[in-house]
Image 1 (cartoon, one colour):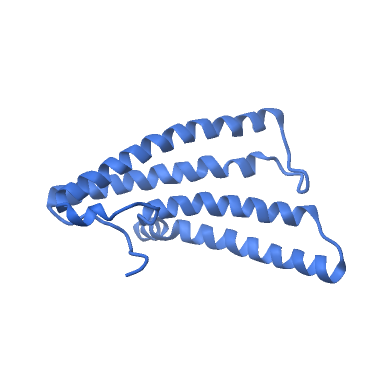
Image 2 (cartoon, rainbow, N blue to C red):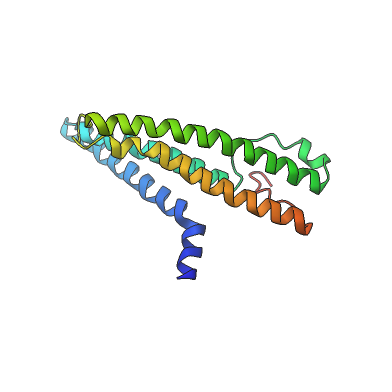
Length: 171
């Protein structure tokens, strides 16, 4: 059980991103073939691609928070002591945590309104709740990953280890 949870913690976003990306690419390819070869296109294909992309964006944002791969200016960090670097990363995570909590709260309102009025998508005729849930799901994952990052940084600060900076893009 511990191995399953560890593997899920390590790869959950990767697998979800893979599923949505494959769904997006396959649906788009099918729709292009249908449009160009058969001169016919469908509404559902466009919706699947659109909503797959939305899920990709929000799950990808949580994955970026986990890997510290989100956009930041870290030129100044190279000139600071490891302790001050850790404190700045903790401060940044706390600010992002507060923003994510507010966004999570307000994103649930949109889902609740859609649930209340029973809105459905135009082509698929599926409840919009399934698609609008991508935003609170993304912010919920971000909050979870920020909490993990905060605990890791506090532990590293206490033990004197260097702060986790994530993988470098151009090293």
